[in-house]
Image (cartoon, rainbow, N blue to C red):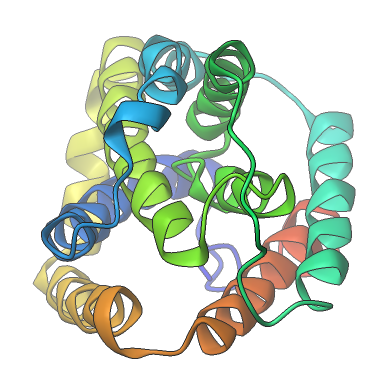
Length: 220
């Protein structure tokens, strides 16, 4: 959306991380209150993610080929998720080492792209049949919050003025609608909407993200 609005690339990353932090804060409140976070089984995914997201926020690398590869992976995830409208049964036990490595790599990607990483983590958790749709959403929204804060910290260290500029650009005209929409969406997703609806919304989000990373929508 920011790219389609014509914002330059150096402004999109801090703006995205700020908005991610706000929305994920509200999302964490709703999903954690609803009891969907399987903390005892998922904590390894956060261990390496936070320092990796900090590093990704600090780095400013030309990564066109990497973005194209991630876009193709997300497009494949759209196809797989579109084939199922219910949670898998039975679920599999996620290997802690694999969660650790996945968290680190996706945290780095989150910091580099300014996405928070949830758009990459959620399909991984679902396609591996590790968690239900609502559990995956709870895991991912906390992942987004922690990574966005770490990514912002890395960005501030690398380019101190970028955060203040982003805050001035956003203003209340953007912050308030984002907070309200995030509160409504996380409330519906954590307690009210059927799983099929949540998975379809996720597929649409993944499709838009993949088209953006592949350079088919907005600036590459």
